[in-house]
Length: 80
Image 1 (spheres, rainbow, N blue to C red):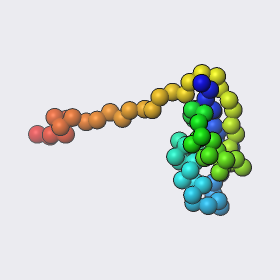
Image 2 (image 1 turned 90 degrees about the horizontal axis):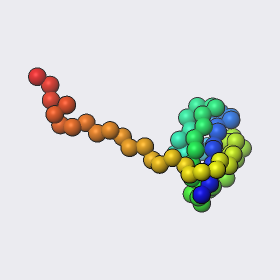
Image 3 (image 1 turned 30 degrees about the vertical axis):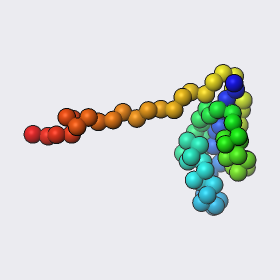
């Protein structure tokens, strides 16, 4: 399966708020930031909405899996 390397090449200032939210959902923050996402219909739809501010490249191999956030145990939250 292939993956897509998506790079934000232009600022989203002055565009619709929904477009900025779509970029954040893709994992893009600042201009020049890049992410590797799987090539599927959901990602392609987001790219279509932001095609004027993105640079998209095809990458061979699978996209990395989702990052898991570390959870704090109850013992670390108790202070003496």
